[in-house]
Image (cartoon, rainbow, N blue to C red):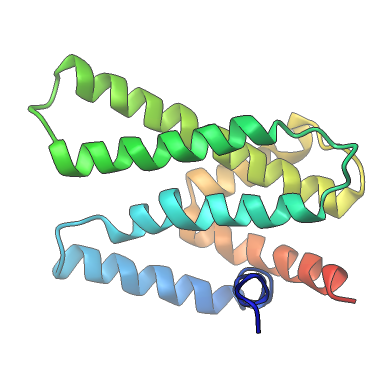
Length: 163
């Protein structure tokens, strides 16, 4: 099985409770064993960019969802996160504040691309901010619980993709 099909199977055919347990285990691992924020690393650097990249494949070409901005924001996310983890200068310095601001802005950009792509694929029309704002809140503020509501919708999209 090609790697793309394996990734799609994980993204679009996992059960919501399976992802919830994976994130819960990662949180426990992060809290009690490791000092590296594993969950944040997984979400920011791996899960959301890969999900956005795979969802774009299924969007019609006429939908312009600012894919190049999404790619740039994904790279900025990864670089900012690695900088904060690896080089963490004293808090309150200009570079830490600038990096944190860049991380937040790029994270919201990635989230909005993913949420807009999901809503556009569900409605078969270009989604507006009013349509996908709740999805952004589910992913940003209530992430593990938000996945509980978002993953069944991704499973339905996966069923549509592989008919």
